[in-house]
Length: 584
Image (cartoon, rainbow, N blue to C red; front, side, top):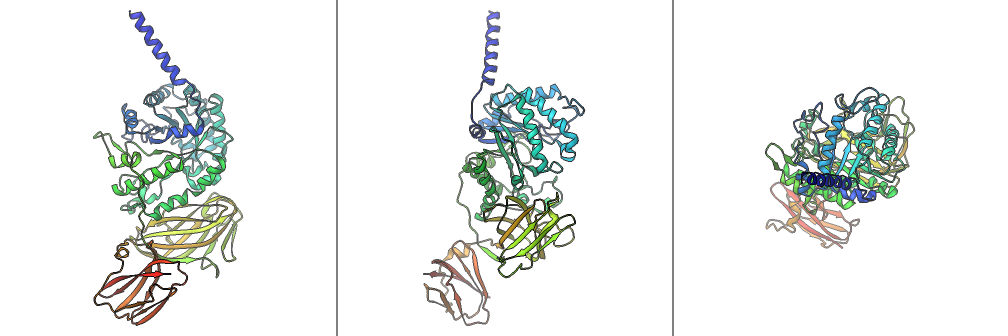
């Protein structure tokens, strides 16, 4: 009887192994679809020097929990390049004990019907000395890929997390290709995840040159607006404390920023037909709950609308959805990731502070060029910046304009419209015009495409009011010719309550507004005790402001406005009221 039981156990074990290793014959797009909604197991296996060093060790029930919530995949960041895990000298042997530990984790995930991405995380020396570290990097991947070669398509490899610093985008193109060649020796059809340089950023996407391989998934990391997602994060530096209180309110302009930043990725995907995985996105716990819920809900649903798989950063630490000390979930994040529907975006009015289409010259914009770089600025009804040399420091060619006024605690919207003679990413930001030149807006990445487009971003001024702020473009890292057709800075107003009041009646009001409806000229009479007037469109955008103190009658020319409803707000010392104006 015992012999029979042993035989049955052996058969079951063998069957399980055969099932695990059975080919699934999924296409790369189908694999990406299977990744679906995913979770990062952050601050565990990339912790140093031990798995427990960052206070967030893996627990055996985690994958069961994650699958039970409705997630489809896990991404497991792994720091392979530690002396206790891999020899630092040739032949760079990976510790078999650590390999067995990773295998047990992968098997646990697959047993819970999760797809699994294992990567190479925090390979710090390759970022500071790529040439010296490359043989070790390639040897490690040869051993890892050989060890896991018999696993089915539920397991994916990610060659490197967030290449940066001296592992430049150009050098990364070489290293990713060489790494893939090593993997393909033992895993000819394994799905492999590869992201662009500069921390897997959208801004570096125009520089990527993917290998000719049909089993690649493109990875992008997204943490914008950075001042929102990383407020209070002590590893960023003391400036992160200045960002505390930054909100994300699911405004139309905030959503527009996301769509603007992803516009080139959508073009790239159409050109290459490559599936996309958002390998990391998340917001730190110091942000308020409502904003975190709105940001996460929007991105998760929007990524899904685009056909992207995603992996939230992360499960059980500072960004996490689960508190291991209390064994409880942050339900607002779970709901945002798994089930919240996408609501209508909120609209707020804006007030135009600056706009130029350069029809009358450069409007005070100038190019600053550091030694070793070459660029020139011309104006032919647009700003044209021709960068003739490329250097590693993008700020070596800057397009600048100073004397913008930014007020403390106010929010702003920046809109750049333009194109380039090739697809190229640049930084645009507003900050101090002297001293440390610190940025107030973070460093948003804009991608100029060959088609003319709007590029937008928003930010909150967390520093004291600055009447001499400088807007800058860092353009020196790629030879390209940029054409900027317009630049606009707007203040985002905090309320639209006045607009929904419609036609307020004021028994003391003797103001006459006629004709209403108007075909063009609107005459306003009896402006007694009225100091200012503003006009809004139905989206809340302020398009006209006037100081009318002391005037009795004025005329407004609305002939260039489209037919429809507008709002006229009149302000005095002791009263404020709104009138609806119809344009026909």
